[in-house]
Length: 182
Image (cartoon, rainbow, N blue to C red):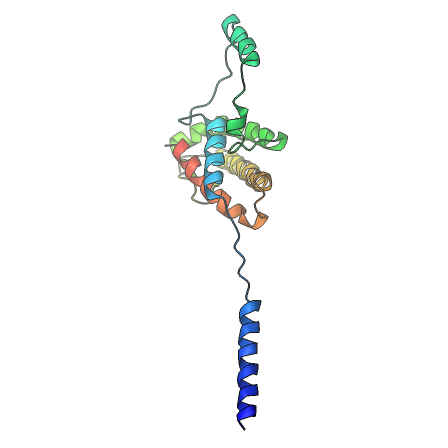
């Protein structure tokens, strides 16, 4: 009888140890600080520091010589490589967003468009707009949101973040978009 109790106790302890060893915790790392930094850089590049439309720089001889001197000076790119995310796709999306913003800014100013907490543009108060203007506004919003979706996916790919986390990336970007239109 004592042997049987000992065998049962051994079997129970063995099963508990086997169960404990088989429990695996998987932590999915989400680099929120890095995404915040990238979001700030991209939004500032698209909309400028205070949401004003960026104009192309003026060409003059002084800026030409500054560019020449800059080409021969030591580079600081190594310090920015940690937070900067850029590739041809992201640069193209930023150009598209910049153009969209230039067309949409008057509607932001009128309150017809607003930034949502989900990282996408939403229709605001368009009561004073005609049917054609509302339709055009809706198509601009759809185009902007599609471009943003592509941007968020590309940022996720560049930062090696799982595609299932695109919603979190969009929420982080939402804060930056909202700051730029106040």
